[in-house]
Length: 117
Length: 115
Image (cartoon, rainbow over all chains, first blue to last red):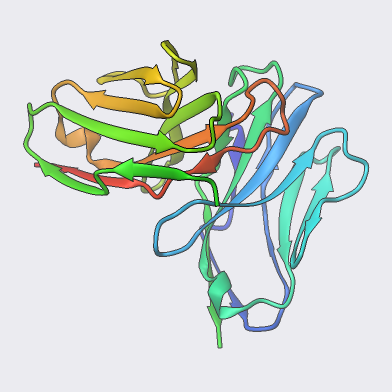
């Protein structure tokens, strides 16, 4: 099974609206971290937000928040008040403490978000 | 922004030619990584380093070798480039490795085309 599944290859959102990008993960570890990265058309990978498996509250960073549902193994990224500059690829990734990935970062295949004016 | 540079940023080479990509960091982070990015695959780990002269294989290491003689530099070598190694290559760094909260920061990437 894939470690990280991002089921939405592409999404559209109207400027100023909120959007949720889905991410589900597969791990038997109790200790793990979940990361979201943004990749604009210019190509760089930009770290957005982190959620630890033991964190009791959902992570937030400015307009980004993470809807973490541990029992469902989902870590969806919520972007509030979308801006044109949010148009990019978004990648979800997991880092397990002891799992088969040996502590390395495992990425999903990404979701392409397009923000419409 | 993390101080990570990659060189060259773009390269076109021919099949069978050796190629070396360089990653340079100014953050003095212990851990460095090489990934490749291909359409439909996200990013996949090639090799990583946990210190000077300490390296290990990642998910897609076949056909690649690495070296780290200084903390700040991590080299990725394609001994004999093949068309399947056409990709975008990213270097990343992190302060620690074992912790699940340790964030990796990425360089700008190198686009490699093997003809």
